[in-house]
Amino acid sequence: SYHSCFVISIPWNCAPTASHKLAALSYAQAVPRTRRRRTNGGLWLASSNTSTDKSSVVDGEAPTTSSFMSSFFNKEQTEMIEEQQRREDLKDEEKQLDVVGRENSEVESFRLLEWDLISSYVARCCMTSAARKKIQRGLPLAQTIEEAEILLKETREVMDMETRLAKPMSLKGTADDLGILIMRAEKSGMLEGNELLSIAQTLSIIRKLKKQVEDCHQGIFENDEFDMLMAAMSPPSQKSREAASSEVMLFPVLFQMFESVVVHPELETLIFKSIDDFGEVRDTASPALAEVRKQQRDTANSIKSILDEIMFKKGDCLQDRIITQRYERFVIPVKAGSKSQIRGTVHDSSSTGSTLYIEPREIEPLNTKLRILAKKE
Image (cartoon, rainbow, N blue to C red; front, side, top):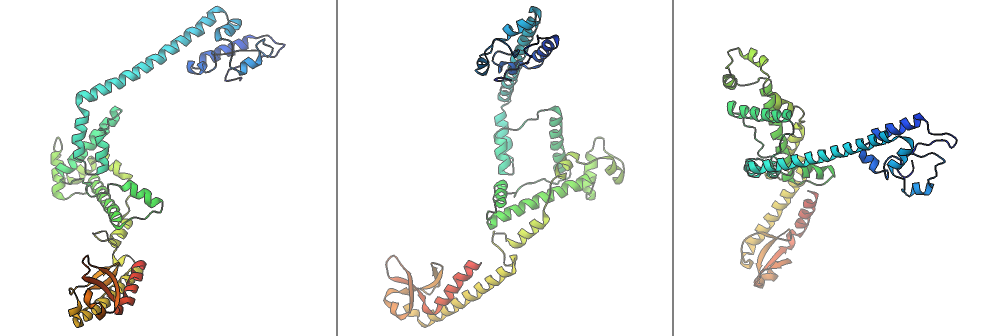
């Protein structure tokens, strides 16, 4: 092959035989037109002692298809191949026009149906932001009749479960940015307490939904629920509970959808055990954390006891009888004129300068200990 040209090599002392011609004809008929266009003029046949300069082959200046084929084939064979090429070109053009026509037809159908408006209405009913964003871009359509029938069955089964069995399939409370949180966790990133809590809530919702679908599929109902479902059948079933359950495959599409869903109750339990409803880490998350927080509470109580005693003894020196914090250290508000009465470190002052926030010397070691414990926490 020289410069993407198909070459049939013929020894210099041999003339082209019928087999050479047959191979060239077979290739010309088999290779698509689009590939032949890339061969600088189509199929090029040459013998090793051809008068064509080899450099012209490398440069892509190969003779035309018809000039070479005419030396090997008669006029009828050449016309047959060229006619076949024209037919292939015509088919390619028809296919392209057909695709463009279908696309234009779909666009016009969407416009007439006001598909954007319908999608926006459906998006308002979505319970998760991810679904809402997807539907706002346009409700997806089935590409085949089989896919459309499955989607209709999904809708029908959800309606049966929610209306006839009064079992809502709610996704309210799932994490909106679950994918982002998972990607961060995969990269060993840190997740905040409220983010972990949203993951646990999502796991809980999915686990309950899967259990609900599995129970309905297996015919595990309360007596009144099963009676409602059987009464809604057309025609109503008069058979026993066991016979009806074995005859009817309940909610098969939903069951198949949730069958591949993997739940993680152990991870869900661990997060709920470690994170409270406000997204804060519980003391019971680990024994070491529980010990650090106990020391924090004991140290803070000791600081407050000492400050209460100082405020009781030197109440006249204080601007107000309160305990506050400056730069994560406990302080008390002291009158500027009474600064010498309370020994300690001034951490801040009021805008007027009449109040100084002083950390008494008696609690300085305890404040330092409290900051060390906060870092351990």
